[in-house]
Length: 77
Image 1 (tube, rainbow, N blue to C red):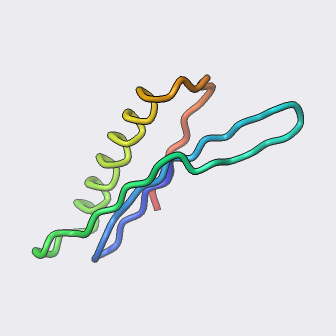
Image 2 (cartoon, helix red, strand yellow):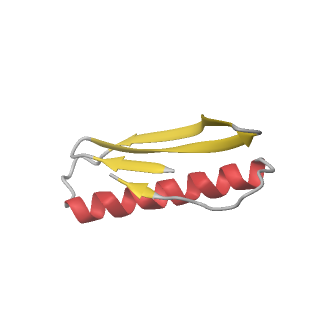
């Protein structure tokens, strides 16, 4: 999962890594983006909102797909 926020918008994407034999592939599963509020928010608040959206998206993807999970990696940009 990768999350990013700026003054105008924030978003997150969920990727899946699949290993088949010696071949490794990364695939985009789902993404979500939002425009920030008209009232300007502080950078920590935007990062928190982004992390919340990312966590909800990751939970949704985990519930809807039967992935074998060895590890979860989070990245906030």
